[in-house]
Image 1 (tube, protein in one colour):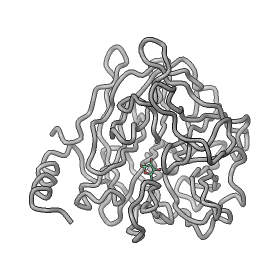
Image 2 (image 1 turned 60 degrees about the horizontal axis):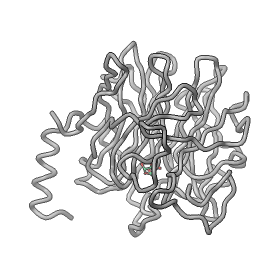
Image 3 (image 1 turned 180 degrees about the vertical axis):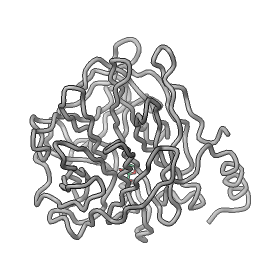
Image 4 (image 1 turned 90 degrees about the vertical axis):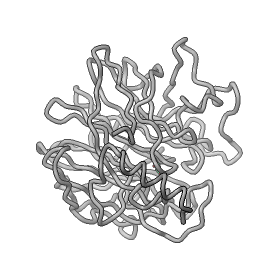
Length: 338
Ligand code: FUB
């Protein structure tokens, strides 16, 4: 697949990689890491070779099921708990089980996942289990108002849970305004404000939104919405929320510029002000992450395609320490800076 030069470059990057895949017997991606029962649980996409031609919709990401990885600590071994949900067990879903996330409430565990229905539109579903590692039983219908991809749940200190989601291009977010699909809508261009991720508080039963999802505003340092052509900073996909030092941090992928970056705000709904980069580009087109605190230390879970020799839809989940400095700024991580 790669000529000698590319193979040499990959070997050089592999030698400098700051971390190794959590597991190597399967390809895993889109890590959503959570601490439940004093352990780390990583809910991940399970990448496969689906033999679907590459296209801008990402149809070559033809995943069919989810695995959960269990770790006694982020620096320990990862144990694959096996398949926790398969597309054939989701009544409304047809294909493309993309990036999942999870939450816990009152002793039950909730797996949130996007998939395409027979109408080719992504929606977000929830599956419920009694253990962090499942098994999970899918609700018969996707969540009302849900659309697009990349759900991420944030549990706030007051017990409220918020679900963030959305991705442009193959993730279809550009086709929606105010939660309504219109195929004539396109991604904004030029100086128009970029699209933002969506957020809604979850209902007590964790199976539905408690309110219609709203769009999050991401601002530049002068208080202006990020422009659509500001591709090194604008939102593309993969939202994540964490709280540090009393502030809310929204982090996300910039997609075609391959960065993970972050913005901060005073409310889980935003607005958020762009602050900087978290992770420089990885091998592979996509970059997707989660941020997790364990015993007072912070970690970035991410993925790259080194193990597969650069195949963009065959990725591996990794973890590395993440540092906030005294001002709360996140230190930039070079994935090949060892
Ligand atoms: O894994 C499929 C898609 O690739 C995810 O939904 C995106 O975030 C990107 O990682």
